[in-house]
Length: 392
Image 1 (tube, rainbow, N blue to C red):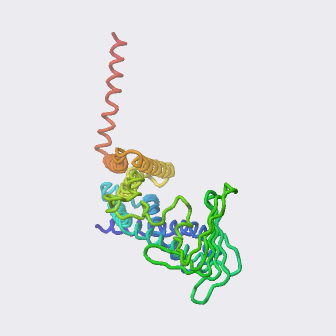
Image 2 (cartoon, helix red, strand yellow):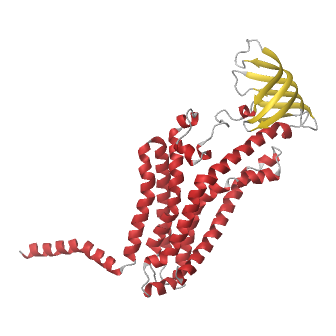
Image 3 (cartoon, rainbow, N blue to C red):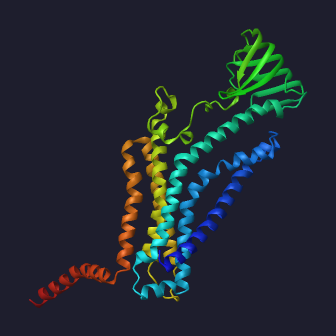
């Protein structure tokens, strides 16, 4: 890079980092406030709270980084034009790519970082978050429930323990599950213990009974089954529409999205969502380049310091929002039909090419005058043709 390019790269990079950290902090704080009940009502520690909330940062930063690049580019171009730096560079004959190369370099670095995060970091953080959620679900019984008190973590589910020993064993255990009114289950056990392994968390009960009956038909007799040992998968106490043992699209690595394992129920049931997630991860890194090119096309040309540029800044933001919304709509379309993949890549790539052409034309007086002449030529011919007909 030349001296001016290095100077401009430092300016836009500093602005990008400040904007990225500020926006990420605001969004993270808003997300963390929603999880405060994990400490207040579920008895979890502050360390686990920060671990779980920080695991959402990779996906948040991947969404915020393109917008931060756009805001940094707009700020840098507007400030440098206000300080007459763009005017001096343009007057010295510098082409638009001399001015735009630092912005394009930053956008390329951010795009590569987003791509690596989408491929490796995001699925890893989502899987780690799943592990913490399993831990919280296991601690729901062993830590949150207080001896002698009835606790209901959700509607229709009630826990009660008589006592809890120092080694974590639960004594006098009662579990009442009436979320499914057609099959109400009540477990009573002398003692119980929480076991956690790679497969999940389980509640093992010893020396007890299971009471099963139909909550809608009161005439049916209650079935009572005695047991010496009974084990309950704690994932059964999750909402009925979730399955903690199956990887969701956001938790899968790139290879698992491209070629799922045979017999994968999620891949068969939600093939469109897996396809949409795959192409969304690959197409999202293109948008920092899209936003920088649009900013260069409309703000890369030097203007007088007396001329207001807010109209162009708002126009750039509107175009950027429109392109991103169109990209998200194309991603949703991919989940319904495979041919939508063409739009997922055509929108950002087409926008980059059109914006690059517009920026080059606006900074080239020869091309601009030639294009203007070609556009005006048909109108001139029609004017003189009309004059000729009137003369005749």
